[in-house]
Length: 141
Image (cartoon, rainbow, N blue to C red; front, side, top):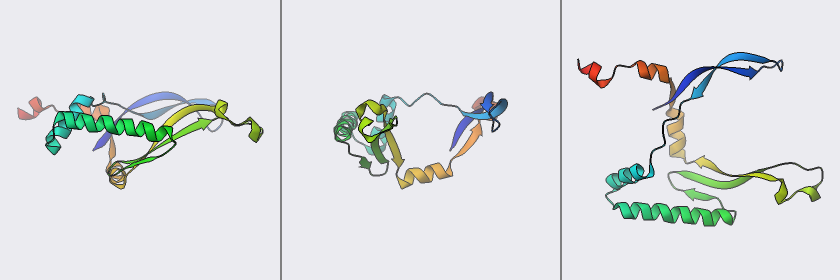
């Protein structure tokens, strides 16, 4: 398992606060797996109906929204913990702090130990090196 990256020349701010050119690793992102395809794989893996998988996913999404609006984190066994959180601007006095200071609502993900193990065992690979590998047709010849 590897995360692909590309090499890219980029202007960065150096320790001397001057702009310099440097080579950086930029993660390459594949298209996301479509929900329908994900559902089909779950159906094949568990032997349940497509409607059941979609129903459970919908119910989980609904419950997550409910718990998040109440300020709760949600632990999902084998996946991890999802926690609603926010970023806020500071203020000079405690009285100036409130909803108006919040500029971003988000969900933090804390992976379950099995996911952490997957991440620990992952590597990265240059996307150009992947593209240079012989295709199936070339290997067969």
